[in-house]
Image (cartoon, rainbow, N blue to C red; front, side, top):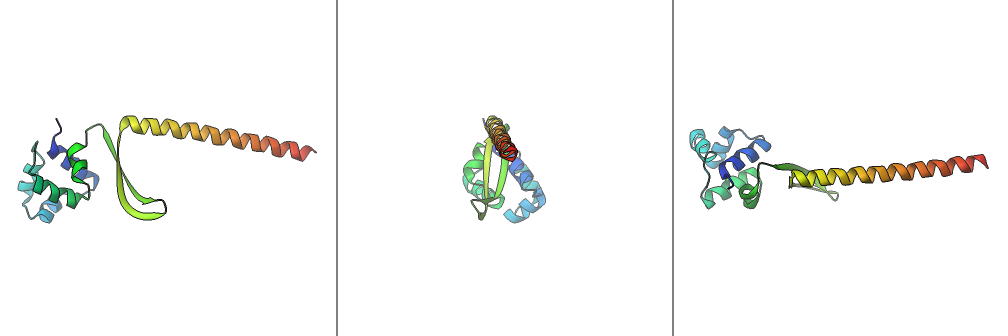
Length: 123
């Protein structure tokens, strides 16, 4: 079972927002806010407010798991934005392996180009 309070604490830390600031933005005392981060379940309305302050969709707050890596993307396809991706560690490993394969392919292509250039220089 997902612990919503832990998810909120993790996303708050990711955004580097102190508990005191979160509490202030939500109109709560720090103690009240601290209790929220200890709860398994949170009222949907309050969760919506918290998600808004954290700038994450409610579904992300509900469904993030401890084995998930969060990455913020500030520019996508040449357009500025403040999107985010949530990756499981398996997806990150898969992406890393794909990037390594692509790197090897680029290196091989560059070696072939160098060899062709050397052959042209000998004529």
